[in-house]
Length: 197
Image 1: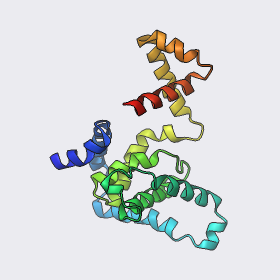
Image 2 (image 1 turned 135 degrees about the horizontal axis):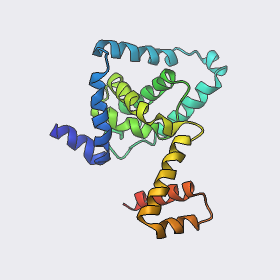
Image 3 (image 1 turned 45 degrees about the horizontal axis):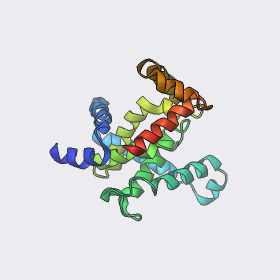
């Protein structure tokens, strides 16, 4: 557990323990490890079996694969685990994301999913099937933040705005004076504070 903590928490921060604890619920999912691996391979084989000709008629597939490839090469490259541009770990990250879009085609791929998956591959030492099912558990809880209409994230930013109004009314008033929507002001403020910390 100490080695896991060193490998996981140090590069990603303690917030990941919240995610990790929900992943532990994965053991309650009624699937045997063999069935989990086999089912993951079904999703992986689906996208890997698309022929070049078929791909020319499948714009959503091309678009999603392109966005995944673009994000994967930028994911946590400062970490040794993802440092090698041609390494197996970045390929595994891409494989799991591609497989997930076939598992949940309605949701598809949205930027940021790679950042949720990256620490899971570290935890599971690159085991794609285990990381896939852990990612599924995380996405079951967070998928509303990745929907195209962005209702989930806007709702959370609105709640954050109410909280800031109660905790720090002056800051709330300042955000309101920026001639931006409160959601955008909060997003910019959070981005700035995270980049400074």
